Image 1: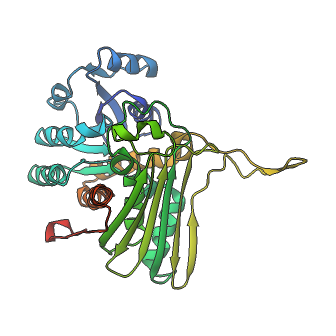
Image 2 (image 1 turned 135 degrees about the vertical axis):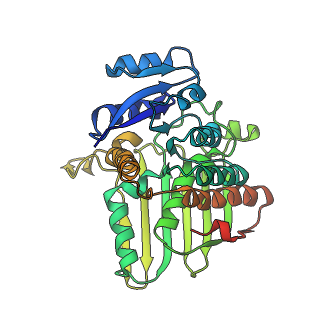
Image 3 (image 1 turned 60 degrees about the horizontal axis):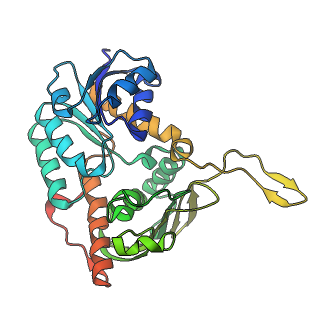
Length: 341
């Protein structure tokens, strides 16, 4: 089977990891081109990888390249929707990092465009591709755990660097968006109907007046009766912490671990173990698997694992969180036929 020729948008931290995955870890794909508006960034990444890929300064020019079969979008979040739309209009299959969009209007335009041009779209909710999250989802779908009643998902980043360049509402739109998708994933077929969120600047209170929030807790009610909580904090000094829990009528599952390995240390200071401090280490295999899944879906003309509707559902929760924080009250989520997963 012919390799899928991929054009990458974004040569930053996440783009560099995806480029290395395409170039070195996926047998069914090749890095055909890299586009980044920062002068020299694409060329630098290509040189670092020892790749023969083309370099573009303008993603639109790359989208028009007939040699590109599909694109991987790893540009800043606020550019995702427009990049997806332009790529789809040029007939390219699209993998996009989360979030797919930052407003519901953008999300609807994306879904309408990919449907109109009949191109595959996959959104990078990588926890769905982690073995433990996949196993939990499978058991819930099979009914092994009974009816979901209490769900929990959390993300705690290991360190908060300079918050100055971080856009407003990032904690909901770019961080907790993962947790909202996880909760939907662990409660398949159910719709979120009410959201209540509280958030504050506890790590860097000096940035609160600028609109920066670094700590949040969200409660979500679903139409099947399940109650879920999601929480995030931008500075967990002990490591990169991503976990979830599903409590149901027949038992409970815990998902995720911050351990570097199964080694546990026992000495005069007590019991301890090493922890992972970086998302690409903790979720390395999931990051690779999501791209492998995308390539396989495109090559075999199959439905992608996480499409626009799933991304829109997580965004609905994120937008409701913003409204809840601003209004200091629970927010009802209205669903139309087009929202349904």
